[in-house]
Amino acid sequence: MNLAIRGQQIEVTDALKDYVDKKLSRLEKYFDAPPASEGNVTLGVTRGLHSVEVTIPLPGVMLRAEDRSDDMYASIDAVVDKLERQIRKHKTKLNRKFRQEGSLKMLFTEEAATGTGLLPTMTEEEHDDLEVVRTKRFTLKPMDVEEAILQMNMVGHNFFVFSNIDTQEVNVVYKRNDGKYGLIEQNEGSAY
Picture (cartoon, one colour):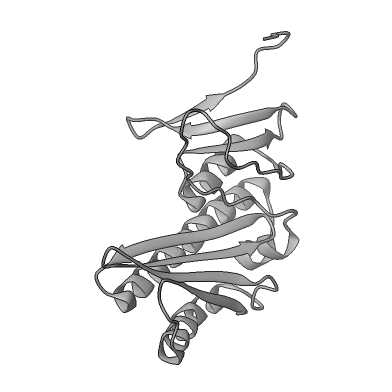
């Protein structure tokens, strides 16, 4: 797997690079071939906490996980575990969906190879005085509500904007305070 490893307020030693490479290479068993896109790993130290953030863009899905702890190596281990859980969860959902559609082959690797577009990774920004400090543009991948919820959970956000494959309209799924999910749709003929 091709990784860009960088440090924030920390020097990335060869030992750290080797450890990250070794641990993230565990993910390669889930793919027929290593992902062609470059994964990003950011190691940092803030207020005594060691943070690790990993983003691996794949066609049709964005794998992303982060962890903070008192030990950099423990944070790396935790991030790899989170990524493995995401991959297994996504693979299970895809296999269930393909079985329902009557597909013969049900492998996560095929979905990664045949998907279209990359999903955005949005970072949380602090907003002061309602000032727009960042604008992102991206192509919305057509998907159903269930896949949108899966994508939202995989990137670790509490909402997800998508193009609804059933209605061809832009929708938003979000996680409610009670742990369930909500869907925002536009009223037909409504104008602001």
